[in-house]
Image (tube, helix red, strand yellow):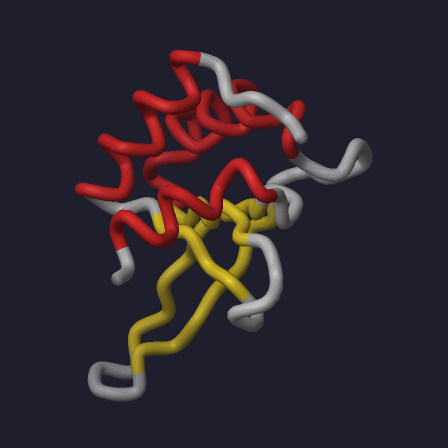
Amino acid sequence: MLNLSSLQKQIIVGGLLGDLSIVRAKPSHNSRLAVRHSTDQTAYTMYLFSVFKNLCTPTLVPIIGSYIDTRTSNTYYNISFFTRSLSCFNEYRELFYP
């Protein structure tokens, strides 16, 4: 089991109160941290990636994606990454998503 650093724990708690999320594919699976921001926040996303890189797949790089808002037909761009599914995220998942 991996232990989260103090900085990682602080970012998770603050981020879950804001715009980060923890996802779980099935109730029997471990959870993973999901980070997704507008490309306007690429520098911040890359900082978060550097903090959580040890919990990601070694070859992972953040992905730039886009989506079309069907209400406005505007295209929006984002940058995102996900950590590996690990047991160290489960307590935060259960704490913030009862």
